[in-house]
Length: 108
Image (tube, rainbow, N blue to C red):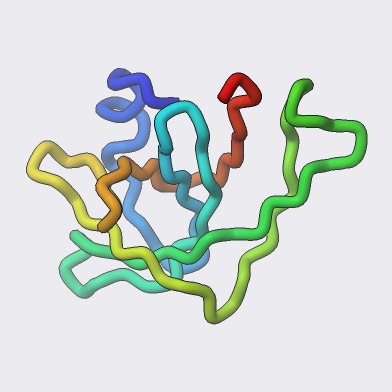
């Protein structure tokens, strides 16, 4: 997911809208979010962390599949578009827009 090809070609041009999924990249882990509001310019949006519930039969050491639940009124994370067209959170992490993906690297 952190591949520069995917960032520049597949996800760069997706326009964020409220209710759309987003994924924050955390080194080898990923966290699922929901976009809750977008600035008028479209260059900034705010997202809240989703509750990720691992599907039955999955473990952290096997294929990780999750069901996602949007948490209403959660802490909002600000995300802005960088000069090179990528999305970056106020915490300094890159964000992919358009899908939710939760992943925990079991090797750390």
